[in-house]
Length: 91
Image (cartoon, rainbow, N blue to C red; front, side):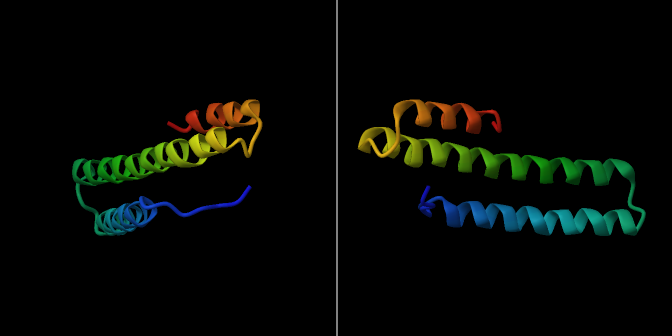
């Protein structure tokens, strides 16, 4: 299978880098003994940011890779269906 970068990939990278920065801040908060409520709130924001990036990536894969494979006939229909089932478990 050939990997193809899509228009959304740079945006996903930006989201993940932002989440990475927030995660570093959470670690710093823990190391400086910040209150648990503050830490958990920021950690929740990191989780949501990563989950949003993952969702965009999964949808991007479905919209571009699987749709293209089905339309172009480069894969057997069952193979595309199996891949769709496999990737949707990550939503």
